[in-house]
Image (cartoon, rainbow, N blue to C red; front, side, top):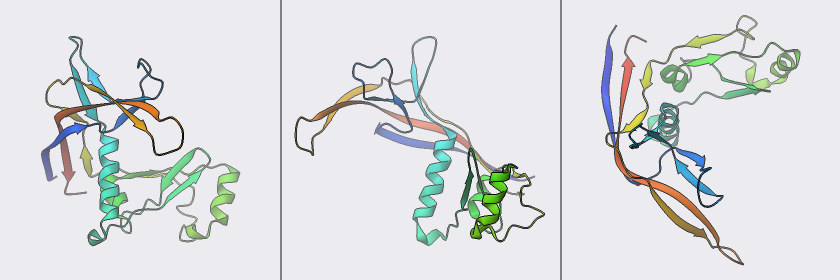
Length: 185
């Protein structure tokens, strides 16, 4: 098989990419923390998950009409979500792979039968699990060197009354990650 493999470097000046959400050990109750790996020696390496990077790539391609990007529709059944699983019609199913595992519960089958947008599904594929391993793969983007996370304060003050203070973290680094494209797939 033929592959294109590469190294991706992203300069991240004064950044807070792929935040971790509320920081439980922070001084304020609405502090947003960055995702970071901490070593035994106390060094901190910010990172961006591979899932976040793929999401950014997918939404960037969707927002650029000149690419002609065709995103697969997403179907949801209670606690199960999946795409159309059609790599010929939808480019993100082709590039990023999929796992279409519709629920076999009666409520899910009834929902699929009532949904006109699924009229193309045939009895052969309706309710059947289909998978495609992603031909495009990207690893976690990790800082190339340890950094000091900076805490900063801000306020939301575009309203009447007292401003609402908040705290957030950011860093300056270069993030490094690997990618691979399976040309045979």
